[in-house]
Amino acid sequence: MKVLGVLQSPRRGGTSAALLEAFLEGAREAGAETELVDFPRLSVSGCRGCLACLEAGRCVLQDEMQPVYDKVAEAAVIAQAAPVYFDQVSAQAKKFLDRLHSFLGPELEKRMPPGKKAAFFLAYEHPKPDAYDAVMEWWAGRFRFYFGIEPAFRMTVHATGRMDEARRRELGERARQAGRRLAGG
Ligand SMILES: Cc1cc2nc3c(=O)[nH]c(=O)nc-3n(C[C@H](O)[C@H](O)[C@H](O)COP(=O)(O)O)c2cc1C
Image (spheres, rainbow, N blue to C red):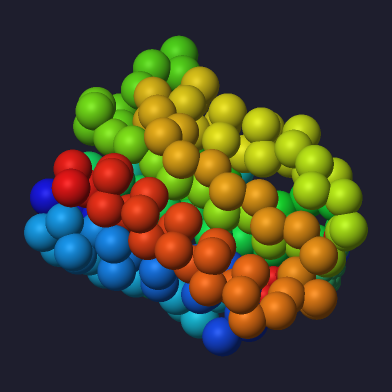
């Protein structure tokens, strides 16, 4: 089984990166083959809205998203981790979603291979645990509605600036166990 992690924070060593890595570690423990895509480090442009993908069945922009399409198509589990920027997922997370438009047909029919599961990690500074539940709902909901990908695990992490070692470990452990579980372990 292939498990793909797509990091959507530009910050190396941040909360999103740590949780995504823990999730992938758990998936490996369950025997999965894992890969991490550091999306902000790729040269990927925003969707141009040309809609050529409707005809071509594939995005025509020739940039570093092209190999990512194959990884998305092949993965049984896709895990994404993003920070909240100005009350929404990071621009990188939105760009990734926009570029997946090529997995839709002209009548919004699904071209995404069926049977996939998704995990979502959302990190933010806001002190209220549920401050961005609606953002998580929206984010995970797009993957279910448009691509038929089941959001099998969601984790929101608040007050990231005041994270002590015990909490960091506990969250990492939850992410690792989720990785194991989604990879069938
Ligand atoms: C440009 C920018 C905008 C931000 N906007 C918000 C926000 O609207 N709400 C919030 O709670 N935190 C906000 N933050 C804080 C980040 O969400 C927080 O530091 C998060 O933990 C970063 O995750 P990372 O370590 O995975 O990059 C913002 C940070 C930046 C750099």
